Length: 271
Image (cartoon, rainbow, N blue to C red; front, side):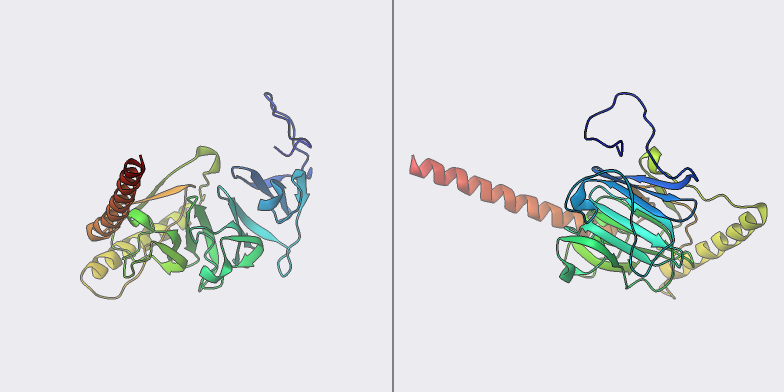
């Protein structure tokens, strides 16, 4: 809670943060993060999720080498994503499902902020689904990585691996991208009327691009202007993608059941 102790509170209490104000706030399971109006980063919560030995009971300013000002922070369940003013993405925390986008060699847990390098342009928005991650880039392109079971990343499967360890471009084989998640983590981009006209024009071009992709011409992704945290629902997703992922899950479940039956038989034989 950032209130200086590990006691539960049944009533709202003020968290000690800079009086200048906070413009970004995100909550994980055991940690929280904030960015002030001066673009400073504050973290608190479970020490292992913050790169600290002990739990941080009050908001503490964190300085990261190479980046001093930040525009966006998102806490996943056990991971954190940070975007600096230049649009560079940093990540740390649980990497069990490749949700940090740092590659398989980075291990299952990353203690310190690390740059997600495969991204080819500045990040404008990012969402965490717990064991998968989706980011929007400056051009409107979308990249995804992490656990791709059930086609949740929107990637056309070309490998047998369930985990996508590095950011991969999402190809627009659908006409819209919708999102649904926790209300307290939602964020919406507010635009002027001129910007709205511009976005409308881009949307028309995106639909034309999606149609072209379906016909086998140049692949591009659809522009995305806003996200809601936790889970991304991709409409009109390729049915082959869903069937492939579900078949893989069914095979894994069948194998697990067979192993369980074998164990039960072994116990009976011993008796």
